[in-house]
Length: 456
Ligand code: NDP
Image 1 (cartoon, rainbow, N blue to C red):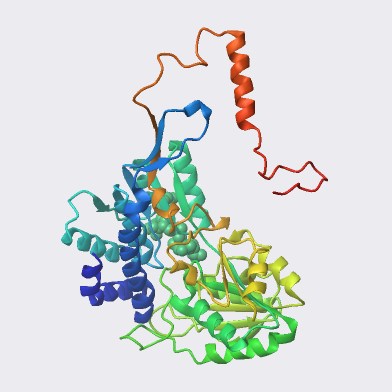
Image 2: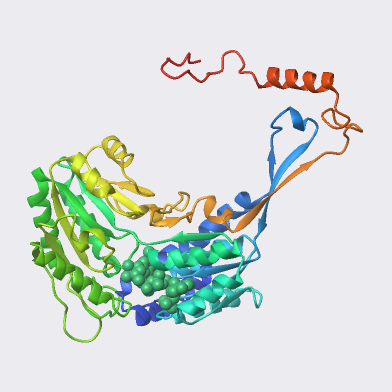
């Protein structure tokens, strides 16, 4: 399939661009780039992660038994995909679901059905048997019908729809893995490399016209470097070329991909300006065909503004001045979302210490969004940003159910703990269990509250 994607890169990019209006480079770098990596990754990792596992003897009750775990396909997996990455966010989940041995019902967004169909054609051309992957098109009701038909659902989209999907899945007691919205903060500390921080903020806020769940949606900058950082960002954003997509390199920022999306961006900017925000650049629609909005930088923003609280999902970057790192952490965490975050500081160690204080499923230090390409790492949101994760070992095991097997060939005719009960035997068993369960000398013990641990 990776070979097919490579050979059909132009066709895939044509359809993605036609359906979304995104810059062609966004289609190639983010969608084709991710898909090629994901195909190679799951092919390499899946055999080991799906193989039967032998587990070591785990207690006196199991003497003489062999313990193992099998990872059994669930049956039929529903993948409900959004419009912002019609290839990466659809095929990206279809690959591990199929690889784990399931059939898949893929429900793309009503705004982007053709990309999903083309990808399914590709898999069929590569030998996927008929009926193993079906693409179900339609609007929200089609998504709901998919939840009613499958054994597990993988959903990517808004938190509101994710909640509806989880409720529906809950009624049927099927597992639901949800990758939802975000309001990802970037923290810029006073000792940061401001050039790198500014370049990273601009790219990961404006790439895909800001329509990425992991987009940088707000920046919190320490007072000492705020003005310089904001000036660097505004200078770079003002230089971006926005327009209807053409060939590679034709524009930097393309259009908004779904109806109503540009109105959300306009509403967030208007709300911020009405409450005193300053527009450093952009702040308006671009007239002409395509839903184009000028990449926008706002300063003098406050946490009360919609652009600092709600997912904008557009080319908008609000920059807020904070007194120090403590305020930055407090504002970053004051959000219902917890998808990802980034921290800029000269010291990776200091960045990691700040990361540990952030309520986010993924954190990058002096970087952003790269965790999505780190396929060995689990990627999932905390709080309202999701349940479960994609990537890593859990990203394929979730498409299976575990079967634990305890087996033995030769065992005594009757086990010691079974009928008929005899007081002497139960006492003997208890005393043996107490001895076997006691901490062995040299092992660390739990310290009593208020006392120092005896250590090793
Ligand atoms: P949705 O969450 O509504 O759509 C995601 C997918 O779910 C689509 O395939 C959609 O179908 C489907 N769907 C809609 N209703 C149901 C339902 N009741 N049961 C099952 N599936 C359903 O996203 P929107 O398009 O409405 O976007 C709204 C906001 O969500 C955006 O402004 C953005 O903030 C956020 N968003 C976040 C994404 C992310 O990656 N985290 C991705 C997309 C949006 P259909 O499109 O055909 O209606």
